[in-house]
Length: 127
Ligand code: HEM
Image 1 (spheres, rainbow, N blue to C red):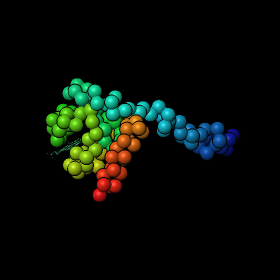
Image 2 (cartoon, rainbow, N blue to C red):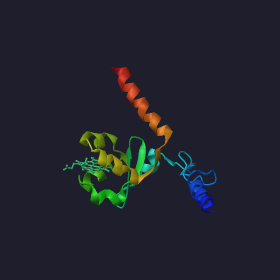
Image 3 (cartoon, rainbow, N blue to C red):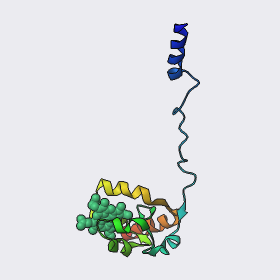
């Protein structure tokens, strides 16, 4: 009788019935991603509605403005636009990069990314 109980206890851990965590049902990786055009983003350039683009990702940093160690002014200067260059120029820490994640709202529209790439190509060609 005692043996039977022990067997049951062992089975709960390795038995096939309980597969908790085996099949992760996390948020979908791609579906549900929002794409914003430069036009969409540009209007969010206010101190109570502030979006930024960094590396083709769109962030709503409205609630972060006051917390930014570099001050809110520098962020507002970039509001509604691509802040990749200024963000990288400062040489932000890994911590700063991780902070970005909590403000992520979507991706820059593919069409607007291509425009940027074309510009770069042209500069190279002229040279
Ligand atoms: C939403 C995006 C941003 C986040 C999460 C962020 C976060 C941070 C953090 C955590 C620091 C402290 C130093 C460090 O850990 O690197 C910092 C410093 C700084 N940031 Fe940002 N930052 C952002 C965007 C920007 C942008 C776009 C600019 C420039 C236009 C900027 C300019 C600065 C400056 C000048 C400092 C230095 C402050 C000092 O040491 O006196 N940041 N930022």
